[in-house]
Image (cartoon, rainbow, N blue to C red):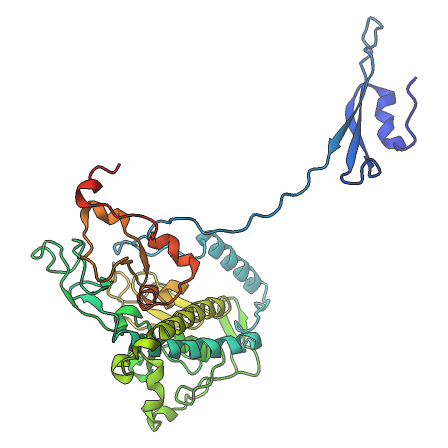
Length: 443
């Protein structure tokens, strides 16, 4: 008879007395080694009682299993080369940044709470109140935005920039490239070669504007009332709603949160008339927030100051991008799924200004969805030029050997700034561009 071990409970040992079974019992022994612990497993297998009266034997075995130590976390490293950013087709709606299944799931939960008459739980800033921890971030972004505009206004006096007169292509070099990829209206007459003209700061920092709202949770902008609201850079509007105080652009600061049931606002603290102090304000105090005329406002820098200005501009670009990413995690920003329109607020406006794909079906209304950082602060990728004073870049078989970088990064790099490591894989700086004849032999 096989006796029950003292460490095994009676409930676990009972099946062995009634019939055949198979199980494994483990006993921890931490005293076996000072470096690692082992687990000792006992395996019992009992046979069945057959009609002939024979009983299969009992097997007893033990084993030691070394505990697997967790592997050390490898240091993150950027890849050597990455693919160029994809070009989204214009004859199709942009993909949703948030999976559509998750959007439907959240809407279903809100509808269920609304049917039960329960208010939707809202945290700042979704309930109209400011997020105190993001107010310093908003001020930091606005200050870096001013430094970025000033730095680019100075660097464009010494770094040549060209833009195509027919399409949105931009090239940072002493001459335009010779790639045949122009998509302008008269590209067939030029065999898809670009028509280069001197560029401006708006070719580097793409102007993305939004309506300024005194109360983002108040009345929506209608098509007939759109001229009653000012258009300012979307980044500036995001900073204002995040807590930055600009006297020329006032914003309502709530002390009590709004209340919602489902998609309906049941208490917004009343509608307040929007003050209009900017009509009599000095517009010269707002020019630092806009890119218009930046090259005329700032003089050319001294040759010894160019690397320093380039590095400050590069740091300001990273600060703006990091701050906008942090603000957009809490503050709602909407973007049209068909055009470049952006609206800072919980809901989009009702101005019928969309003229992109199938706008007739929507009566010119925008298809609002959650915005991404690239839609509020576009990187505007341009071809990376290894030798700005060398021969122009050629297309055809050589095009796959070139890399790209954001326009601001390319300008600062040519001016002598040190760029972050995350931009180098896409620039493909370690790839040697072959001659035209050699490129045909490359697989």
